[in-house]
Image (cartoon, rainbow, N blue to C red; front, side, top):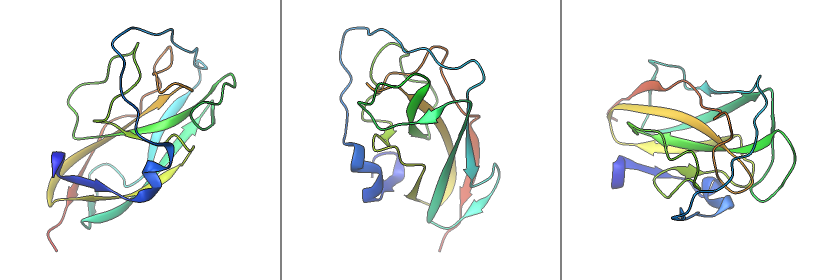
Length: 143
């Protein structure tokens, strides 16, 4: 499997989004905005299939396509070393939650993995400034 992860149908409610080649205007974020992973916690040992709960303060959650000031939707980065381009829609290597979901179930192979959230605007483009969680490291135990 690509990057050793699979994701349940909930994550796909927002549909995949393909990045475009041209730069786009970024949506303003609230200066107080913070994205964070509620669970699992950094350093936690989890089963191969586990729930990830997303947190957001200082802004609201809205589905993709909804244009309301200081809102966005979550994107989950699994085992990514670099952040996406800040001026383009996030691509298929990032899991999109365009339906406004705030949690998902993920399945990963045993071993160490990283998880990080980034908020996207109505068009899946990171806000300005970008609203990015701390990267956490988890360990998936062998069954």
